[in-house]
Image 1 (cartoon, rainbow, N blue to C red):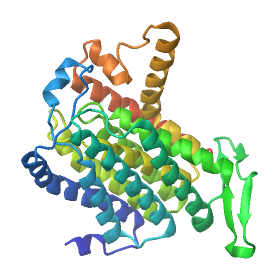
Image 2: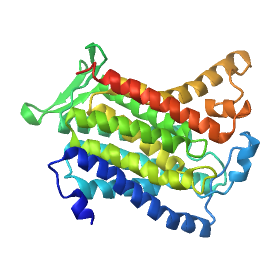
Image 3: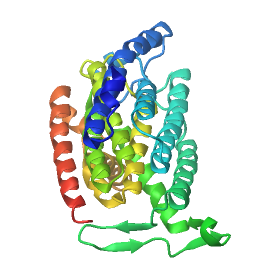
Length: 347
């Protein structure tokens, strides 16, 4: 049956939509077995003691569902499209960041606390992953170490480059662009991680962002990457079946860090680093709310928001969890639409 569905590569849009279906079904079907396994092992999420009191009932809910999502995305890519350099780079970046998140989740569960790895440990991991990804895409995929803005403006971040060797096999280390890729990948990974605070919030917003990125990759002419993005969107759909309120499982840092890295990886390969920040605008807002809260509180001792990230602020104002999630989904969809529209200003 699957062979009949994916057996006609003459229609690339067909493959993209089938990837959504395959990843969604795989995730939705496998997840209950993972939930049962986690419950039998007594492995559950640790909830912040200073968070909204209504969240305390979520203590012990199975976590690390992101592991199932990553496996299903990988399997979908294997059966849907041939592996190309761009797909391999994006997939490995996602899986490596997922492993970092898995270590964080294991540390959190093992020590029965809501915090896992230290910020320094996470940062070292993200530096290694982003630097390796950047060097691979520049030297293997042959992307340009430049950042393009809507309207045709471009900044060349390859001006400070170390070249090892000569000829076509020369190895380039674009230091400024490597720093930029780190900031983008680490920033989006942590931003998605911060967004993952309400049932269905991260899953729904990542789904929309990756659908948008899938359209960008398709327009860019990178079918395998479009299938990769579509598979992530589909995995989010399958995950939401079990993560909608009240959630039966959380994706954990295993999922949130990996999905943020995957989004950043697609942006780098399709040269939409700037417009990706618009498409993922909700993630940026969530991260900025935390930064603003911390900076202002340290300087004045006062809080800008009742609680950060900003989705908790609206909970504190009396919005129900479902109302916050649905409204943030709507905002996310608007950001994705605006970012996709701006993408055409790059062409």
